[in-house]
Image (tube, rainbow, N blue to C red; front, top):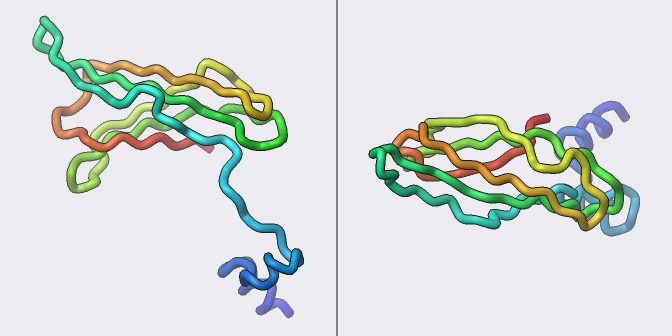
Length: 122
């Protein structure tokens, strides 16, 4: 019995158990990210490079949810982390269907940063 429980914990429930309703299905997360303003880079008159993006966080669930801080990561072509920082949305919590915004701009981004990813800080 312990081995069966350990197997379910490690591998997850088989699809037939989910389909028959014995085990709840793990669904998509309730807080979702959408880029509302694609990442952009441009040269400023000072010679510095400007980097900016905008994102929305949407509560697709059925309960009020707190909005945790967001980890912004930039990676190079080889998927190596080259820069990161933590930011916050403009709202601390979201009711079902509500949205929060993140609007970021920086001038200290490495030139080899290409891929942007956003994750919640747990």
